[in-house]
Figure 1 (cartoon, helix red, strand yellow):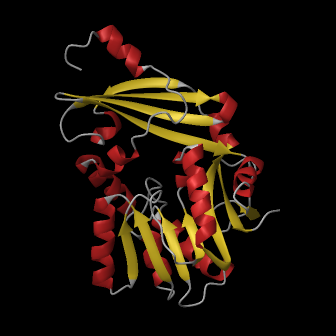
Figure 2 (cartoon, one colour):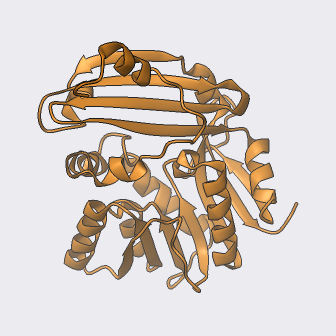
Length: 286
């Protein structure tokens, strides 16, 4: 920040924003360097970064198809599909899959791979908050806790969208962070050269990471300040944490009912002490 006194700069680094008052999701997913690194994380079969590890995804797909009684030809939509890791596996069961993501790099990779593999998958490059269709789906998916990165207003938009897109007897599957995730986090600040091993830029930079907790709403924020030679930028990674009841309440406001709580999207048992859990929802009020 050329010309900005160091004290004022550090004040900005440590400034606590109001909940969801800043949004930089597009910067994270569409910056050329970070998009490339995110795609690499997606495609690393062994790690749970950007996507679940690939063994988990395969196990998840094998659970999803019988759990939701998805026969060949059933329609599935994956909001935040990334490079199509779930879409590919579900398509191999004969399902008609639509994947939506605003990362142009991920969607391009997904389309090229589906063409090579001869898979009939529809990939749409779009912000799923703006996506609209008259189609109805037997399963609506939002996986890797994407729901938790959305503001209350954005979550309301998505829940209304989910409800309107459900086929008769259709279902919603998503996962979220639980209260144990919130409780185990501590407010902190770190700074290092090339923070996160060069994730944020291809040239030298300094990175600050500050974690904020908003106790009254069980909200976490990881705020990144990235100082490069020619620019300084901020990235805000919001993580809303839920109890089963708070999730149920949000769904009920949009005439959606939680039908089942599970440990994850591979069908493991629900554990109230775990940092994440998953839910199955259907149309209708409790």
